[in-house]
Length: 90
Image (cartoon, rainbow, N blue to C red; front, side, top):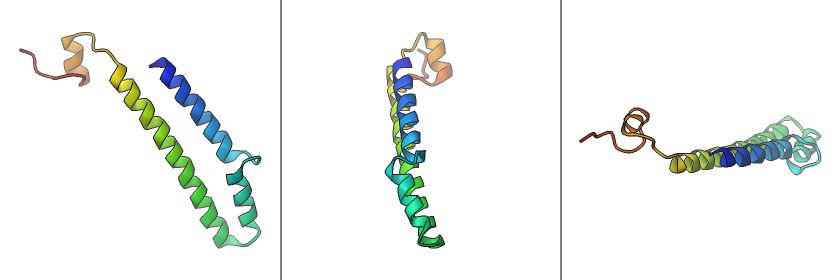
């Protein structure tokens, strides 16, 4: 769980840097669109935001599913209270 969390945090940091640093394409395209007018600036900015949100959703959902699948259940009581496993006690 800890390793996947650290890897996903690192990927989020890299994607944030990519979408906010002037050295990379998304910020440069928004800066170029600013010279042509307001409408173009809004359209290009919305496209960049959509890409950033999609990257975050993919990383966070991957981290959630890998952590959920690898989490061991300690006892029947924990399984019944946390929702892992079946909630039926025979």
